Image (cartoon, helix red, strand yellow):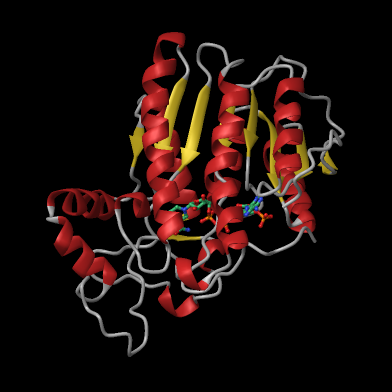
Length: 305
Ligand SMILES: NC(=O)c1ccc[n+]([C@@H]2O[C@H](COP(=O)([O-])OP(=O)(O)OC[C@H]3O[C@@H](n4cnc5c(N)ncnc54)[C@H](OP(=O)(O)O)[C@@H]3O)[C@@H](O)[C@H]2O)c1
């Protein structure tokens, strides 16, 4: 992470030839639209007539995504490369927001998991994770909310994991708990101005998030995987109904209620894999049962390619 905030603009990896961002059409900014839930929300918003600003780090995939969106829905699309763990990139994205003619949708979606015990990881990696999951959401929301007009909408992609626990995703679970709580309070604050805030709390979802753990991508017990498109569609329905929290998938809703109602020690037992006070250090680590704690995605260190 760079500590020096430069005022350089973010590299634009794709820009539609079509004239856009004139203020005639709504504008949506979606972070992490390269793949998965963010890409599907971008498609939903393009389908609703928005011009788009999309961000990500995988520049080739991001440019392809922009091209695809333009071919399918004919919005103006600008795709900018942005590593949200870097303060100067976040500052540049804030300037991007300030420079827009208008901003109707902000979707704070970018995120990843480390899938590693807190004490086994470097502080630098855990700090970078916090920067993406927490600093970016807070900073971009602050820049956007101040200038949003009546009818505008913020979607913060949180996770069911924010209500759960995991031996290998402590920072991830805590950061998602923050995103949900932050969104709820902000929804109250912005309601009188007619600006909506939705916390989207997916459970297990097929996307690039879990792409290195193919064997774990199956339904079991109450766990039902959803596609990113299903999650995005449910998010849009929740916005239309002016909801503040959206838990897509009926069984995920049931899981949420169970986690809320069960005594915490039962939650620790079920999600943590073994009794909390076990002093035994032997044996393999239990599999993580938190809704989206990846086994070994190790994606925080990926560079802009
Ligand atoms: N999949 C699940 O089971 C699940 C469940 C609950 C919540 N979620 C949440 O849903 C959101 C979207 O994840 P997904 O499942 O759709 O996974 P995904 O397909 O891996 O998408 C994640 C997006 O975030 C971007 N991103 C990751 N790290 C970034 C960084 N340092 N800077 C900028 N962009 C970054 C990625 O773009 P680049 O790779 O191009 O940078 C990608 O576009 C995340 O916030 C995740 O925590 C996922």
